[in-house]
View 1 (cartoon, helix red, strand yellow):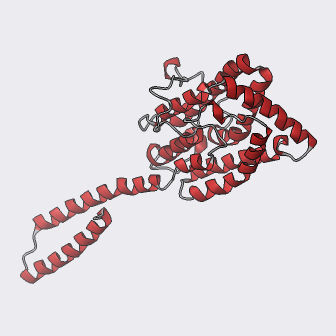
View 2 (tube, one colour):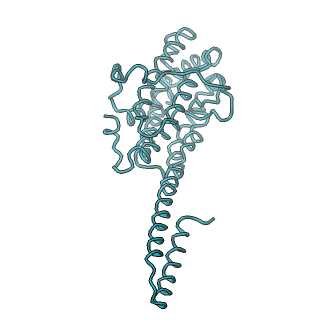
View 3 (cartoon, helix red, strand yellow):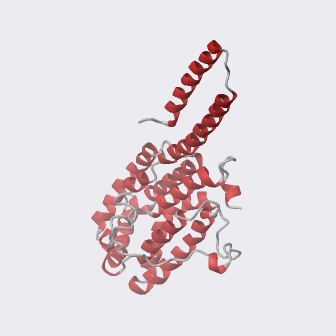
Length: 293
């Protein structure tokens, strides 16, 4: 493929030869020098967005979803995702240890802000492993039985519309133009998701089931959400955003089973961080504290 960089090399080779020819003829051309300068500016201007695009594309945001297959709810999942018995929960505990290395290997080229997010994400899975639910003990067995019971109720009754709406709304945030504070909108949206879970799970499966499911989601997502959002988005901290601009859990447009609608909330957050670093603050070092200010 004929790239901008190879074009620059050819341009300089050609211009060198042209200059020599001009000296031989003793007829320097001001017009040709001006043309060279404009052409060089064109190639440099063309190369910059290509280089930035290559940096962005090297961070594989979808790798997060591949690493979390079978562990974290994805947009294309239906209620059969929920674990039906203790054996399913034990299988979850066996899958968790492979996740940190998978994510680390798949996203080595991501920008610094995204790497901090991913590091926090891996801490979330360490929390799961250290929790009683994965312990080889009588208490661990009891916790797995209780968790399986709650999860089985969700499997029968809960379609996880909250997560689908969460992911769909994050997609809308990802698509917003540069200059919009996508990070803040995503952080405020997380509050809406937790409220949605409590409101929808409790009538279907009871307070304990809702509490266990929210707690499990918190174990996985609390560390990365805190890394991105800090403590600035608790309770009423989004109140200063005008009501019409506050992110809301929107219904999913079209068929939720469409193959184009898949993946997890985490890949969306990673995409937002990657876009923010490369395009919203291109002339400064990315600083999460400043971005969330």
